Structures are given as structure tokens and as C-alpha cells.
Image (cartoon, rainbow, N blue to C red):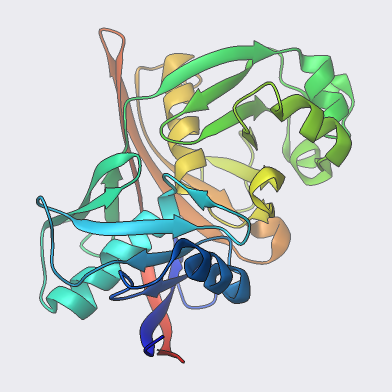
Length: 294
């Protein structure tokens, strides 16, 4: 195998060494699936991406995403982080938008706006909503008491590319206390599309932020993720569907990763119109390192 150039970036990070780390490998078309999987396992970030070629195809760049345990069809922070690397390192000049060809389909990423030039935005697939889950079952799986679940809103399966069970909690104390009881989690997700678990509450560590979130995806080898674009896309869809803030439209700041010392900021813009939900998730990306994989 020839040496591969790779770049490490922090995604949904306001500064270096925050947010969610990502390794992006270039010109990876010659790698087998097994080689990509082994590299992702060695990198041991929640995801590693492989840009198959520096040349676009069908209007986008072919990209594959691996966790240490498996390939996934879509994930949010790898989408934003990979688009950032393609813009800076492959194209080499500012762009307004580019598209990634992922297993789930084409995902466009937009670079900034006049008011926020350093925020990248990705438009996610239209959400699907699945079954609701019994609040007592969810509380038991999270090691919580029933009173710590916010039963004004349902715990519900949502997907904008990956399935998550979105769970509203009563307060920040409940979010801090949440943990995944593994045997109960795996028993639950066997029937629920291999779903991750996203818990949230309307309190936050920073007064500038609107919600606090924690995400657990043990099925894919991610015990807790510091910043999750796909999960937050599901959350944004859920918030407008259930009118969590009393409106059909949101533009909010969501914090994640504080409990594991990787503070992250994820932006949500979503609206519901005649039942259709449009979701955009945004954040900043910071380069931290680059090198060659020998």
C-alpha cells in the first residue's frame, strides 16, 4: 500500500482540541474494505473518512465513512469535516458549496454566509419517524428514574440517514446521570434499526446555548460521541415535528460533549411546512494535524 495523505480536523469545534475529531484520508480508491476498516480501528476516532479520489464524479466527491467497528452510510461530523478538507486541501480555493457522494446518497455542504462565514452547513435527508418507546423502558435502559424523563414529549425513533431514539429529559441533572445499560440497550436496538440514543434537555452549561445533548451509539462501537451531526439532524426534526419550542421553525445552538471534556457546538436550522421538514445542521471545523499513513 502506497503512503496515504491524511488530515485530522476537529468538527463542531469553536477552537482546537474541542468538538469531534475526524481523520480524512485522500486518494483511497485502492484500499479494500478491510484496509479501510483496519485504518479506522487504528485511528480510533468515532469515525474516519476516505475520499476515494481527488476528482469529482457525478457532481460530487466519493466518500466512505467507517467507525472503528463498521462502515456507516451517513454521519454528520464526517460529512462537514470531509467537505472542509476537500475545499482546503483538494480544491485549494474558497467554494460556496460542494457535494459528497455517500452511501445514503448525495449530501450538499454549504460554506458560510455573510453573517457567519466560518460555519459550514449540510442539508440532511428528509426525516423518517418511527415508533415511540415506553418511557419506563427507556428510563430503565438509561439507568434513570421515570421522573427524569420529560413525558410531555415522546421518546421516538427518528432518522435522517441513521436511526436514533430521541429522548427528552427533565433537566441537566438527568442528562448528567444518563448512562447506557448495555444488555438493555442491545436488547432494545435489536428491534429498533440499530439505533443510537440521543438524550437532551432545555438546560445548558453555557447560557448562550439552547439545549444540552448527549449521544450514545454502542452498536457502532461509540460509547459516547462528543458531537453528532446525524443525531442532531434527528433531534432538529423531532423538535419541529413536536413543536418543542412552540413553533414550526427553529434556529438554535446545541451543546454536546461537555460531560466528556470535548465541548462542541452544533447549530440547528429546521422548519416544518405542510408536514414536510427541512433540516440543516451547521458548525465550525478546525485543522489540527496532517501526515502520511505508511
